[in-house]
Length: 155
Image (cartoon, rainbow, N blue to C red; front, side, top):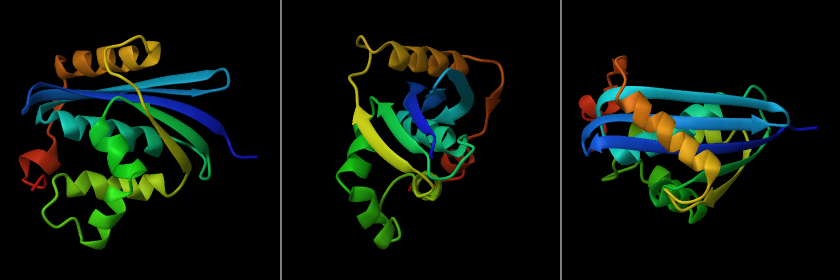
């Protein structure tokens, strides 16, 4: 039987672009894991998408049933409305963040993922936790280079 997993994600950029970070909460039965990382220069949309990529890549077993909660219309709509699959067919021509969308699709296709949009900065406890993780990561002292952004892959 496939694992049933609940994921919450959030991204943050302090300035857009600016320092950024992502936060992830993964829950499966009694198990809980939190992930976060900060970057020295990036965008909010990249951190929202990076959070989803990292979360799906962290899953140990292929074929997991995943409900993923995000406050990012950019990510949720791109998948739920099928836009990303059209972008992929056109090799992401003219789209931002192709490096992350390719990474996302690789991880997404390993699982059965259902996206749910939640209002940011509202009463969703785990989304608020992800926001706190993302902001703390962006303000942290161990900031990585977002190679896709700083290297120009966002265009």
